[in-house]
Figure 1 (cartoon, helix red, strand yellow):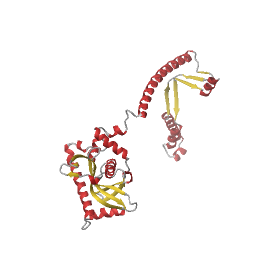
Figure 2 (cartoon, helix red, strand yellow; figure 1 turned 90 degrees about the vertical axis):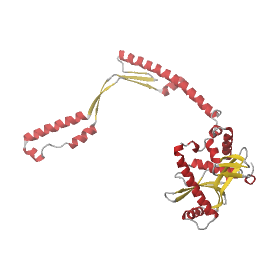
Figure 3 (spheres, one colour; figure 1 turned 30 degrees about the vertical axis):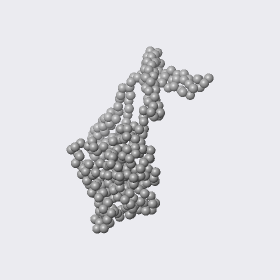
Figure 4 (tube, rainbow, N blue to C red; figure 1 turned 120 degrees about the horizontal axis):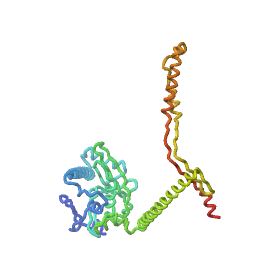
Length: 345
C-alpha cells in the first residue's frame, strides 16, 4: 500500500466522488454499504431523500464550524467555544481536520475523516468523527472510523483510538464515546468483498463451508429421524395403554404391580371440591338482619333470623362447592433403579 504522501486524492463535492492519482475511487461509506455492513442510503425512496439531504447539510454545517474553530481560533461562536472546551476537558487535542485518506491497492478507496486527534495524557493518536444527527448508529460509525484508521496507517491501526463526538441540538450537549477496535483482517475482508461483488458476511463467515454449521445441519437431520422414531413409539405406547386399560376394566382390577412396574386404573366418576377459605370469608361477613337487642326480647324474630342465617350459610356452602366429572385415568410407574439392577444381573 502506498503511503498517504504518495497519493493524490481529489474530492469533487458536487458529484460527491473521489479520485486517486486520476483514477475513480470508491468512497469508504459507499464500500461499506455495498458489502452490506452499513445502511445503503441510496435505496431510500425519493420522497424521503429530502430528509437525508437535510441531515447531510446539517452535518456539514457543524463539521465546518468545528474545523473553523480549530483553524482560526479567534472570534469564536458560543458553539465553537463549547466544542473546543469539551475536547480539552476530555484530554483531546486536534492535530488535523477534514483529512483525506485512501489507498490504490487493490483498487482505489478514499474517504475524509473529520479530525485526527491526540490524547494529551496518553499521547495516543485517534480518529474523531463528529455527528450532529438525532441518533447515532454506533455500528456504522465504528466501521467508518476504523476504516479511516486502517487507511491512514494499517500497521498502526490497532494502536489508534477511535472516537465519536455526538452533538445534540435539543439539549445543546456533547457526548464523547470511545468506539471498539475492528481487526485489520476484518477490514481486509470488506475490501475483498467489494472487489468480488460479494457481501461481507459471506466472506467473513462462510456458512456453506464452516464445519460447525455443517454439523448443525446433520444434527437437525438426525433429530428429524429420531422424531419419526419417537412418534412411532408413542403410537405403539398408546395402543398398549389402551390394551391394559381394557384388560383391567374387564377383570375389574384397579392396580397391578411387580418389582419393575405399577399400573393403576381409576374409573370415571365425580369429584367434589370445597373452598373452605371462601366459605369462612363469606360467613364472617354475615350479620343478623335485625339488631341483637330485639332478638333477645323477641323469640319469633330470633327464630326467623336464625332460619335466614342458616339458609345463607347453605347458599354459601353451595356457592363454594364444585362437583365435576372425572375421566378414567391410567397411571403407570416404572421403577428405573430396579430395572437397572435387573439388567445388570
